[in-house]
Length: 236
Image (cartoon, rainbow, N blue to C red; front, side):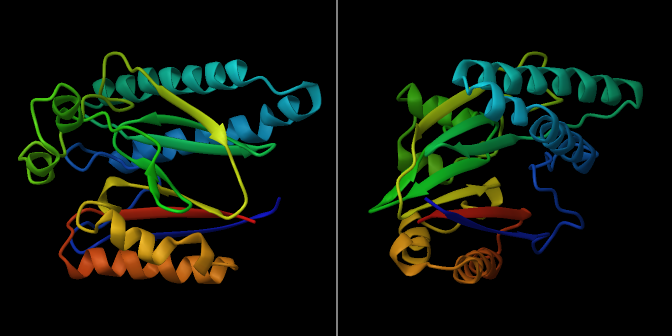
């Protein structure tokens, strides 16, 4: 199985900066928080992942490593905020594909989708609205326009304790995986995503990139205020 990948990011129509991890817009220095978390996971991939390849891969050990990084970064970013009298935080979603399986950690409301014959939302948001949906106190229709739809229950750096969610599953050929910040999917529908990201339409990173740019521009045309980051992976 082979893969190709593309990424696209845009500051949007209102913000002046953008972050691959979604630095919290209502908090100061979101770019500091997101950059710190990215750096920590890149360092893990460069220094630690090779040992998983050479010494034997264990899902439990992988998730423990990732959870430890998230907890350490939560403490570090929280301490930075306390020292500088500011509040800052970031969401996190990470996807690793290895030996035809995917592994995900999620904190916050960035998301991972899988497109095969339909649109599949793999991760679950850590938001007030998602909690109310799970408890049956909101309907999906009410949730779409709820005044608290962007209120996070946890994020790295602004939560006293974080609880990471982990997901894993099989990867098959002819699938598209989407990682995105919440600004990417507020205004467009899942049907519109599928129309552009249907795996049968894409056989090159250039094709995927055009779809990412189109959907980003559609968000901006509809006046999405948040910044937008999207990563796309196609399996063949």
